[in-house]
Length: 603
Image (cartoon, rainbow, N blue to C red; front, side):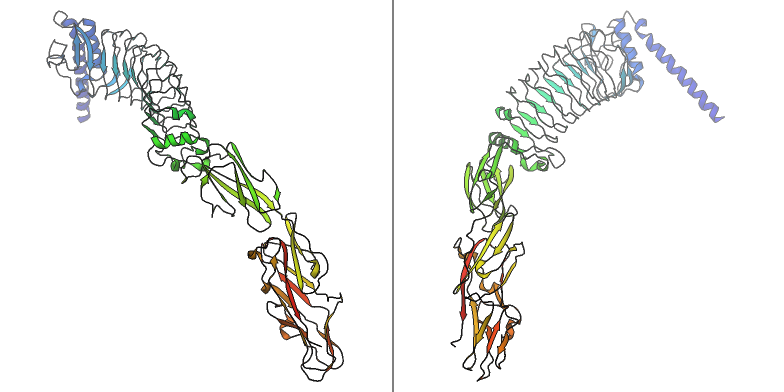
């Protein structure tokens, strides 16, 4: 019983609404002699009321309670309807809960201003704007529209505002010579039709869409405000004709570069943050009217990659003067290609050098300051100095492959480095090899490079050849006597007490450079005599227990001696007196000499 009653009630309400609509439909013809506008215009208003759910408008005052249609601010006519010379000229229903479909407005040919913003209109009849040749402004922002009907023939249009809808396509926009304001922002557009012939356009808002490309902007010399931000643009068309442009917003796109800005003689604001821009046009510096260049906003490791190494010092200085904060620090320089127009080398691209004093050759464009380092890392470095095409430089003293690192500043801001590079050269050195046999008390050691390795040998000590390594090497050999005999010996013919032979070495000095800092300490020179033997008479061989292992001879050290027993007459000798030089790691190459003092008992 309850269900039946509810169904019956709905049917009665539906019939009542239809009767009301039928009454509205005949309103214009029923009152033809007393209404204040043509019947066709009156009927179009009735259609709009019915089609946009007029019963639920926030304000529908006087729509059916009076025959006065034109309100014109008097509150005596229909709310939202304004007339001029007996014709509807202005419909203002902003934020009035209009919904559903906007019907054709062709029946109101002198409609100049249509304000339907902030409603819930989902579509407009295909011929909705046909014949509205008096139309000046259309404002239908903040609705649910997906398309706009043709605007053909509406040559008097000066402003169209359809921002914040669901638009996916647009009608033709070309040829509207009076159109100065277009706002299509916050929609779902992927493209824009031709803008040719918009000879008076001043405002163009296309931001917050899904645009991947733009039509030509040629001929838009009157354009002052161009908003293209928050799209998916990878490039921009030529801006050469935009001589009147004041503001250009292209931030939050996918741009990899900016086109030439030459001719933008009035540009004041440029926002290009949050892109993938790697280079800036050099002629940006000619746009002296700029008030601020915002290249820093949201420029982080995931956004732009503007490389100052591709910019002239003048351009960098210009951008610095127009930007807020440290825009350079906000770039993703890890994406920068550091290849520059220029060259850095040692001794004019030499592969090797025989001297530690070399010449750095520098040809780097736009450089203002430079600094250099010999180390395996960038520290320590020399202080910044003014750019010069050549510079005398001293390599570290060790013979080895050397790398000179260079850093260059191009913007006079030495807190940032615009280009870093390096050059490697082999420091081989040339030394005189030891010649002749060991004689007297002079000891000579030669360390000389061969190819990329290092060989150590000493003719006077018959040390042979050993490869040099990063950890250092030992050089070992056996002494010969001054006469060339294989054995060292002490011979006691008097039976005196006792007889010993001792040895001591001085530090070895690099006589190739005479640099006291390149000595080999005597504590690195060792003697071992493991096999001193008695060869005649009755005596006890004694080489000193300390010499059973190698012993440093930086102090006088006994290497051979006879027994301490008085009265014994004997001879003690050795044929395996080992000599060792422990070469420190990366010891400088060159010829080393020192003094070997041998103390022989007075026999």
